[in-house]
Length: 178
Image (tube, rainbow, N blue to C red; front, side, top):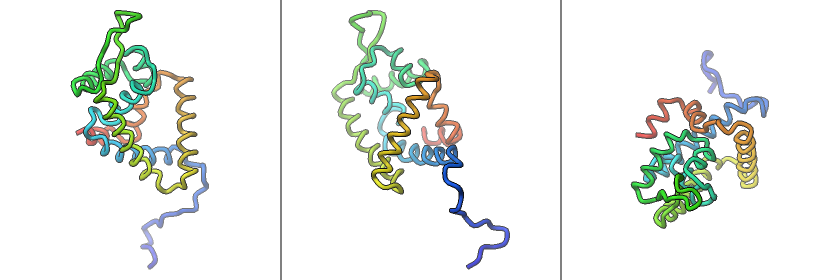
């Protein structure tokens, strides 16, 4: 059946590589939808997941260093850490090298919660990237991580949470947090 004269038919003939922003936005939107749904039980969803992941897998010496590593505003980080601590997933401990500083340490419950969350996020990412062959999924993840690391190195103040809010629209982020 032919399309109505005023209706545009979808075109799959665009030149590849000409709309990176749209492509990244689509992937980010879908990633955020699936991952936030899979992490509903974790305080602050994907933000809590990222913090817990760095605490467990990296040697970030202080809360301040954690904020810098994740490019999260320190005042926002404090609220997320408070909630992760209230859920018994992490603890603040005095840094033995600097008693003015606090180290963020995962509890046994936090390590178990992260392992479960990592499994669920991997499943969500498989859905999001399901249109790609396995080797392209790995290449996409690797390229995205290298690009993000390069951006973070060049501009460490870049807040990835703002990018998510911009891509999803503030209203979309609010809906998912509720």
